[in-house]
Image (tube, rainbow, N blue to C red):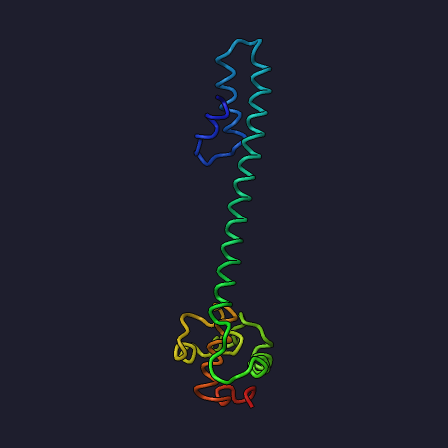
Length: 161
């Protein structure tokens, strides 16, 4: 009964202070000889509430991680097959030279983004949206292959040759 009152308190204040106020009010309404037993019961309810809240939070975190892993798997699957005749070895060589293979990198002048150092215009021309550095690595590989197939290695004047 007392723990039920705690569960509906959504004041956002300090949890221990809220629990102490609830306990004081509850204990003030019962006979003094029952108060120690009520205090012990309240502490047990509060401890169980904390365990339940932590378990629920852990379940939410695990569910979010599972959904994120699944989304990444779908992205890899979506861009698994490279278009055209460019090989992964060729793309790996270009990426290594352009960015050290880092899909999140942005050039110091802010003009080139991602594993293949796309300009935003070039990225958009091969169907990319937003910043390449924020796109999944598999998508960057796929769009680099599209660009290579369309324009050849000249899109990367130093690293493509």
